[in-house]
Length: 273
Image (cartoon, rainbow, N blue to C red):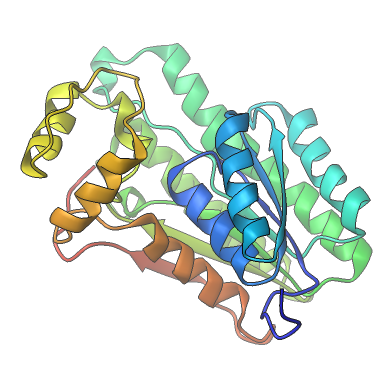
C-alpha cells in the first residue's frame, strides 16, 4: 500500500460488512489505505473481503459480532484499538428492515430493528468517540441512515432512521469542540440483500426486469451476481453499493475543519422503500 494512500495509517471499523453497502465501504476504505475491521455475522463473506483488501496492499480483519449486544459492540472497538493503537473512522452501517404494516407487524421484528438500527448505533457512537478521544484522533463517525428518514410515513423502519438522523445531529452538536466529525449518509434504493425481508413477489419483479430467472424466497439472500446484474440493467431505479462507499470515502478524507453533515445517495428515479 503506497504511503500516499489517503487513509494510510488510519484504523476504520465498518459494521454490517458481510455484504452490500457495508462490504463496499470496507473494501473502499481498505483500498484507500485504512486498516479495516469488518464486523458482521457471516465470517466467510468478511474473509473474502479481507482477502480482497489484502491483495490491494491493505490490511483487514473480520470480526463476527451481534450489534444488538452492547458488550459485543464495545468489544469490537476495543479489539481494533488493541490491535492498532487507535481508531479514526467508525461506520455504523448494520441495519435491518421488516416492512410489514404496523397493524400486521411482529413485535419481535420491531425489537430487532430497534436494537440493530438504534441501540447498536448508539453504543457504537459512544464507544467510538471515547476511543478517538483517547488516542487523539481527528476522527469520523459515519452513520448510515436512509432516505426513508425524509418521509413522515415510512413505517417502523423509517422511524428508526428518523431517529438515526436525530442522533447524528445531536452528536454533531456535542462534538463541536472535538476534532471528530459526524457524517450522516442517507442511501436511496440500492441493489443489495437488504430487501431479503420484503415481499418476495416485489423482489421477484426486479429480478425479472433484470432478465434473470431466479426464485426469490422470503428471508433468503440472493447471490452477488444477481445484484451485479441489477445494478447494470436497472441504473435508473437501483443504485450500486459502491456509490455509497465513494460518498463515505469523500467525507472521511476531507480536512477536519470541513464538516460534511448529511449526504443523500440515490438513483435517478426514487422508490419509496
